[in-house]
Length: 43
Image (cartoon, rainbow, N blue to C red; front, side):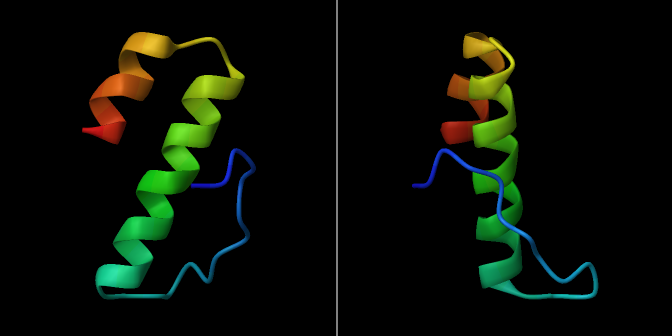
């Protein structure tokens, strides 16, 4: 998983879009010192 935010199409749908959204949220949480939330998002 990348630790950088990825640019995604806001109209994207499907499993790949969901994976990208969670990966972005995980990167955001880690970058903003929210380790508990990051662990929840990663689960």
